[in-house]
Amino acid sequence: MIRRRSSFRLLALMLTIGVAALPAPVFASGFQLVEQNASGLGNAFAGQAAGVKNASAIYFNPAALTRVKGWNLVASVEPIGVGANFTNVASTVPSAGGAPFPVPLGSEGGNAGKWIPVPNAYLSGQVGERVWVGASFNVPFGLETNWQEAPWMGRFHATKSKVQAYNVNPTVAFKVSDAFSIGLGANWQHVTADLGSDVAYGGAAYYGSLQALVGQGLPPALAAATLNATLVPQLGPSGLGTEVPALISGTSNAWGWNAGALVKLGEQAHVGVSYRSKIKHDVGGTVDFTGVPTIALPGSLAPIGTGLNAKFADGPVTTTIDLPDTFSVAAAWEGAKVEVLADYTYTGWDSIQSLDIKREGATDNFSSVPLNFQNTWRVGLGTSVKVNEKFTVRLGTAYDKAPVQDEFRTPRLPDDDRIWAAGGFQWKLSQKATLDFGYAHIFVNADSPSSLPNQETPSSTPAGALVGVYNTKVNVLGVQITMQF
Image (cartoon, rainbow, N blue to C red; front, side):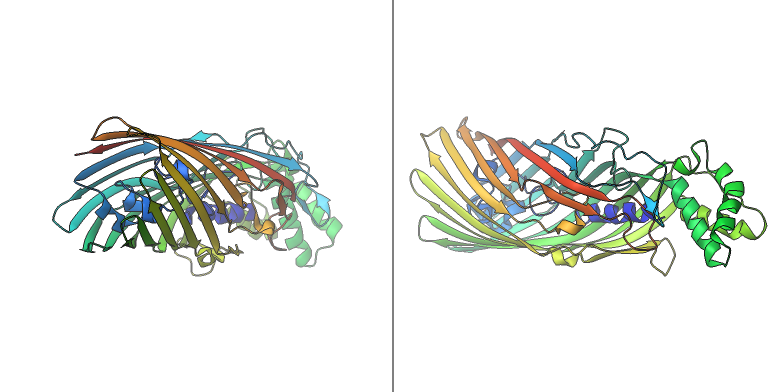
């Protein structure tokens, strides 16, 4: 069972999501997506809480809406291309009591990444001398990976993962004075997830049953003979080597809020602060196994069969996840030709220390898994140069810490620290329309280690040790149109 447990842990891990993300297109902190406009991409999103000048301020700092005149519409898409590979060092097949399961170790999985678009749209407008309103739709969390060279050696930990979080953010901003503005928004978030893994069902069922019989006082040799005569014929054509796919599907709706303030310093500088609250997700989901046989053992062995059927039964599960809060402080200085932007962002990932999963209606935990996320920080620095009235060129870099510790890194989220190198430009089509283009290459720490054990706890279903290194490459593109009305 307990492969299911691992799958549930990872479901919630992604749903913390949200869950960043991944060799995944989740490259803010953890599995967040910072790619929420293309106009900031060329600056590596440095200083957005102070320097954003369009309706995407709804996401980065709602108070900055007061810098946007009239009505403003932003539509953009940021395709994220991930190349993620695993190199084996000392991985093993699942084993119990020193006996390896009769399943192949498998391949290194190939490239688990792909290109994934991240769309977003914003609309804001000034409705009074000192009042602005706005609303946005964006994808603040997302993941899609597929270890596609089957069978791959980490398949009992993860195969295919797809997670999406859709966010709607109505906002209001007030210009308290010519030098000070505040903003406030509500966030409704809908999360969907489909996470797959394989289960070494034959070996897990056999060795779990063997342990139960020995625990009842049966000699090991007699226990093995009993199971060979009763359980093994029911495991399917592959017997002890039987593998079955498992799929976790879950959804959640939750509310949060964001707020910000913007201070104007003189005629050229702004300082902004922005906060996004924790979001508590009560996740409801199901687990579905394909090809798991129904075990019917005779006589005194019947409870063992009943227990196996219950452990690997389809059904509903629930968990609660507290997505982290974020705080950002940013500065922007803008001269006649040059703008300089900088920021520091803190993310409270320590809100996720463990994941407790229950069957629906149960009081005891189905599983309790330590995750031990660490708080993270990000710093960014960017500049924009106005070449002429139509063209502005942008450059930027950032350093991004990851919340995942080496010993907890999984093939769903092989996250690690990274450095951004970004560039882009803005083309002013007319007085009311602009196009923005951006590109970033993200350098992820090379050879991020994987050290997942064969068993998370002595009672866990063996999954095989996954020992090796991940190498991830990330490219981000962005295109945006902005309309002024």
